[in-house]
Amino acid sequence: MKKILLVEDEREIARMIQAYLSREGFRVEVAFDGEEGWIRFQELSPNLVILDLMLPRLHGLELARRIRAGSDVPIIMLTARAEEADRVAGLELGADDYVTKPFSLRELAARVRAVLRRVEGKKPGEVLEFGPLKINLAAREVTLAGRPVELTPTEFDLLSFFAQHPGRVFTRRELLEAIQERSYASLPRTIDSHVKNLRHKLEADPAHPQFLLTVHGVGYKFHPPGEG
Image (cartoon, rainbow, N blue to C red; front, side, top):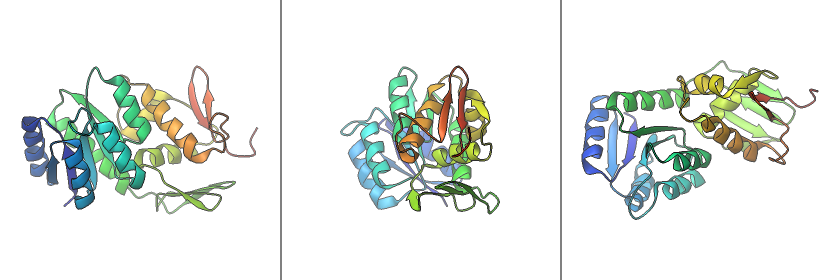
């Protein structure tokens, strides 16, 4: 049974989510503020975290930062519609998905299953090599010059999608649909946030990237070393 940590200060919403996801076959533990969420995260070692951003005692973004400092566990953020800046900040911290309030429990459960599928999904046992960059699709591991690169599930999915289509230019919408199984037209900057994270982890100089290039007015492409 997959373990989910839900950090949500609105108790009625938390109870509804816990009850629904429990019926869907998940073990759901609840924390009602950020500090309690941090303690429960360390105790539980969950398979996935559902995290409200507007939390007492410790803001959701700070909790996400603490989690990401030592773990690549998937994070789904719960946000209000007016909190676009916080959503972008959360994605840049390494959150994998977001759901805006109000939301349907059915949609949230679908997002949970989709994120977990991406984490567990097995691709052919192929290793893609581009100079110092190696991407093991089956093991979901990335190394750069022999050193492991820690990526979130969504970052890995985005990088592996790029790497399987070297040189091809993709729009943000195409990339979102490829890795999220749906279109996030309401927040085009989602992909920008994930690309920014990847550049900081892969590029010697993120301001002048060698792997992930911006195609102005269109989107992004993966540029293998040595190609013109």
